[in-house]
Length: 249
Ligand code: NAP
Image 1 (tube, rainbow, N blue to C red):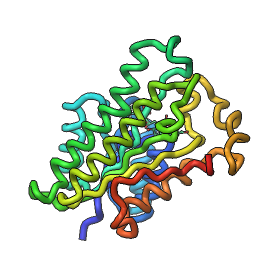
Image 2: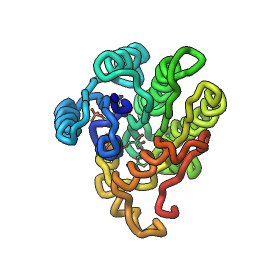
Image 3: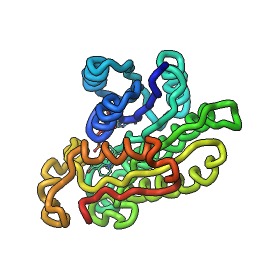
Image 4: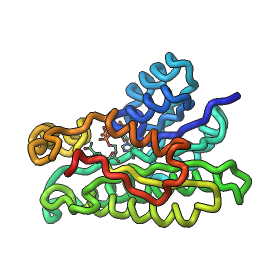
């Protein structure tokens, strides 16, 4: 019997890499997408293979529709049809008030976080839909509590992209329920990854930790565990939900 196949966008580092490790432990074969850091993706492939699972790394910019189609084709060709997709690829752009943000940063953030998630969902539904001959599946989109708090003075364009992710999650869940596809989102709170340094604030997690009721940032594993739960049969009646994993914030 073959293992279920999970495709993780932005699966090479941070929360995506934690999802890859946890899913491999649960018996999935992994297609690990990345954008630039091929070394991180290849190291993770070796880790997954050491657990006895199959794995492949595929470079693709999720904001490029044709690259996304090729990503899915390569996954199907090498590992088989994915029954699960986790959309983790995301960027914030440099932290600033909106008036000081570069228009290119705003465009790129929306393109990767929102349009890229839509492209990946579309390719997944084309292949998973029971009405189209597929076997059904599960999609998890990684959102953010900024969708609700708006991230003022930091990155309101990023918050807007994640608000869109929540809307598409609900709409697609309802659209695809009778295709045998569940669609949910996880909104991680402050999590210890390189995302904050990429936004120009490497100390952000430590600085904001006192504002969190649990008084600390999450580890990537603490986000990966609920993601893997939502992928599994224990969440069989959960669709259209955004699960906030925020330490109470
Ligand atoms: P991270 O450590 O910076 O990792 C980002 C991942 O996305 C990397 O694998 C990166 O690959 C990939 N990526 C970036 N641009 C891409 C593109 N255009 N196409 C394909 N892959 C791309 O970030 P993270 O903190 O794990 O964030 C993961 C998700 O969680 C994001 O959606 C983020 O918005 C969300 N989130 C994070 C936090 C937090 O506090 N960390 C909180 C709420 C939500 P390369 O290395 O190859 O570029």
